[in-house]
Length: 198
Image 1: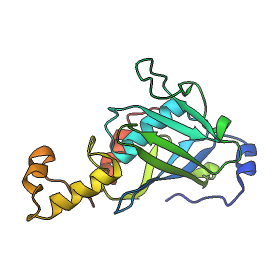
Image 2: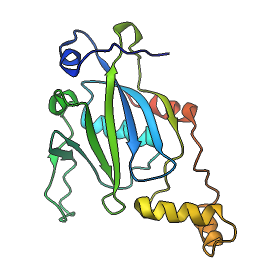
Image 3: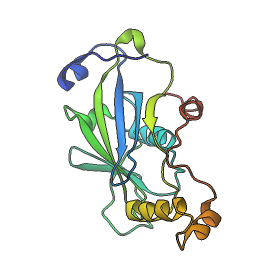
Image 4: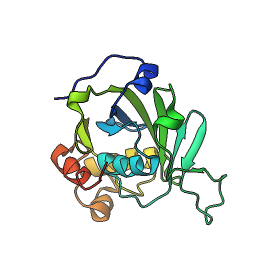
C-alpha cells in the first residue's frame, strides 16, 4: 500500500511539505521476534510517539519509559523514581529534533522488566501516500504480558505455558489465561491508533 522514496536521512529532513516516516520497531531479547512497521509524522512529539508505540506493540502503559536518541534520554521525569538521573522532558520535543541524521534510536519500557526496543527509520512516504492518521502496516507475534519478568521471564513463561507437563503450566494458565505468542491483529491495532490524533 505504501512505498518509500529511497533517500538519505539528510534529504528526508530537507524534504518539503508534510513528511511521514516509516518506522520499524523490534522488541529485543525475545523469541519469536516481536516487530511492527508503522508510520508517523516526522514532527510527532516524543510524548505522542510513546502513545503510538504502546498501541502498536500492545503494551498497557503501566510503567515508566524513555527514548534514547543520539545519546540523550527523553521521557517523563518522575520525582518518586530515584534510581536514575531524570531524562529530558519528551512532551514538546519533535522526533525530528534529536533524531537529526540518525537512522535508529532506542525505546525502553518498564525499567523493572527492562524491555528494550530498537526503532529503525526505514524512510519517508511520498507526499501522495501520506495518511490522515497513524497506521500500522505490518508486524508479527504478540507482545509479552505485562509484569512477566522481562525477556528471561517471558522465555520461562512461554516454556511453562506451552508445555502441559511443565511444573508451572497450571500456574501460568491461572495467572494470564490462554496466550498465543504468534497472535497479531493488525485491524485491532489500527482501530486503537485511529483514536490518536496526529
